[in-house]
Image 1: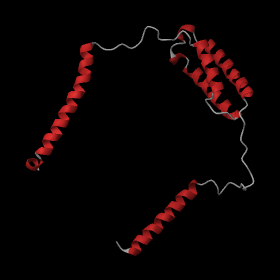
Image 2: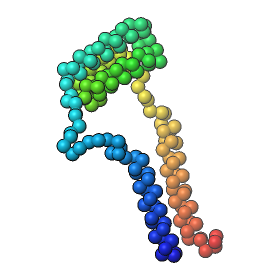
Image 3: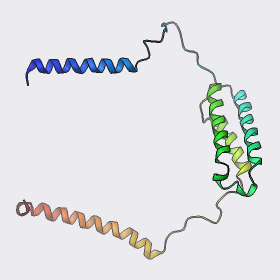
Image 4: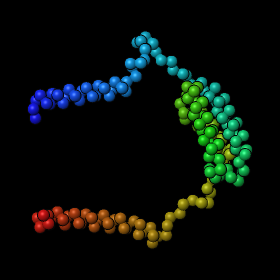
Length: 163
């Protein structure tokens, strides 16, 4: 390859890279000096808990409109649950806390215990298939794997004839 063409290609690559990273950089518009430090919010867990209780109160009002028998079917209250979840997330971030965090998780678990305690799948656990079906489901992939290995070995030994 021509050395001049290679230098031109490297120069073009550096130019394109500079244009792309300059567009992604936010330092051009920011006027921060080295002495300024960004303000970081401290997580105030007391305020966070108060906000979670507000979200929980709204969720309680919304869930009072849902029949108790329908509370185990998510399709009947998905909108209300989404609003509750969004409320906890937005308020946690607004206050300066991570979401989820232990305070929020504890509150959400309490809400779940209150509204969805009767929704466990007690007797509907998964069962193994019958032994004949289970044996077939295990042996078919094993034999297919062995057959593929045998085919590869056979083809590699006969590569001079097949080529």
